[in-house]
Length: 352
Length: 133
Image (cartoon, rainbow over all chains, first blue to last red; front, side, top):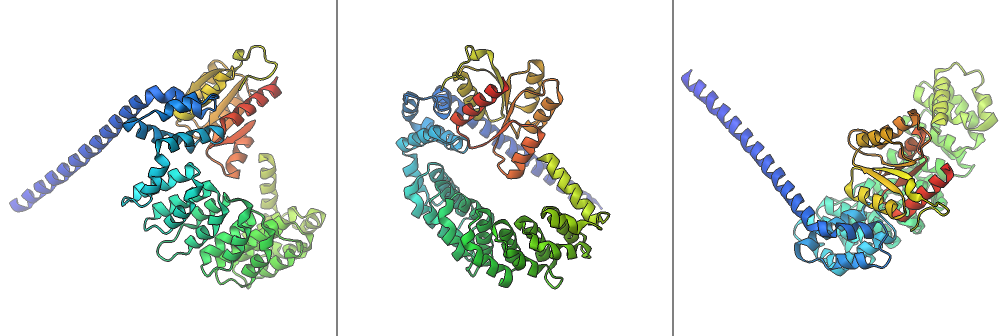
């Protein structure tokens, strides 16, 4: 009994002691951060006016930018970090001027060296800086960083390549999605590729033939988003034959965005009950997006589908298919699916 | 960059700027002040609404994501107030179509996505004020 009580007291003291240490650690970290911020603000305060003058685009004679280039030592490090942050918020001429300040400070060259630093945080920051500085001569290095062992560095390299916007890197970004063990998240890759302009359409066509399903999905998604109609044969093939359901759904959505009238038949083929429900829904929605009234009979037949969401999607599609679609809805006005579709349409109209 | 053409006294035009990011707040204030506007800059949504209610400006530039009241909340309050016709420009890093749709649905007159060009922002402010006259 006495031993048990002593153990309990010991455990309580240990827990309280641990908690106290944790609180002390948090307080110390916060205090250090606060004093570092205060130091940074103090160092930056003489440069605040020229910095804001340049960032706002009011440095017509370049004197404020020149003043920023004079910073040295810790002040320069703090200033460069502030400039990098500003580059995420502004663009245009002021951004170009701030990039020149970074170049004069040697920050771009330092970032190139840091891409191989042992710290992954330094490597990720370096990649980000090179992207924000639009350092297009570093594209090959950033492509290499797409296979870095750290996912943060890979993400940062993809982000940087997107900012630079050089379409010659598109193939590498797309391929990085399917890299074994060191893959790039699909969303990060898609965002980077979005920024690379129209020169990536052929890369996306190739991507739709890739062995990796996530690569095919991103390529299909972007082909639809960017309206790359040259990718239509590949999209139709993915919808008809791909082994991955998500890829097929993505292809259906893309066809809805950029397909031809004859694609109504392609999409209609996959609305039958033998297809997976999620694919049927994607195709029905895509038929509405496509807007070809030859889909009216297919959609009208789906108004009585046992899946209420599919019936509602069919009703929504019919609502946008003109007089033919409207006629198909006659006699179904009291159906919950049609009522919901009409309500959603009126809400969207009110919001617009 | 000068004040709107044909405005003999741009300093009589008051613009409210609300952004919790000191960099953005300072540079927008500086840009608009250089253009001749009288700018009141505040760091959060609650201060923005208080400043608006106390002395309605001719135009407001509101960040969307602010502590307390968001830019959308402030805009909603403005549109429900007796000064509902004051033009409002939303400035935001939220760039999805649905974010922009929400901004306009609540009553924004313009929506500028960060990163933004300060020069373009000034053009838009000038244009909105010219149309409001």
